[in-house]
Length: 182
Image 1 (cartoon, one colour):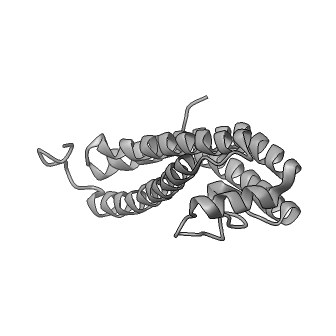
Image 2 (image 1 turned 45 degrees about the horizontal axis):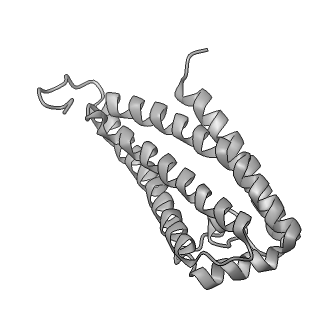
């Protein structure tokens, strides 16, 4: 099967919808959002300021034992699949748009940066979950930074895709100039 933008978009969107539903169910069940979303209910409830180590441990306490177990399960299953699906979509979509917009393939670094920060964030979250009630304030602070970097990388991917889409549209039908493929 050939990897196309529509196919990878469908996989990424489907995975995103499932994970957003799981995050909403988690919030509604345990009364606190997952650390991956800085405590928000789901992807539509962003918390751009992140969280302090104290807020992270307040959330972990609010989950209770079942919530902490389910958060770890969610991080070790769906939150392994979602970044992989988004990476695949980002590479295929940005690669296609970069080719059509006649810009360098440097843009492919953005989804790679996203997946690295997301997986590193997951390691921090699972570490805090497994070590609870021991406080790992340094891990909590680093994990919050990774959450914000991950969010910034996703936003950069979306903005870059939009800009490349406009460039591709503006350059359609024009012959490539030397240096465009930079």
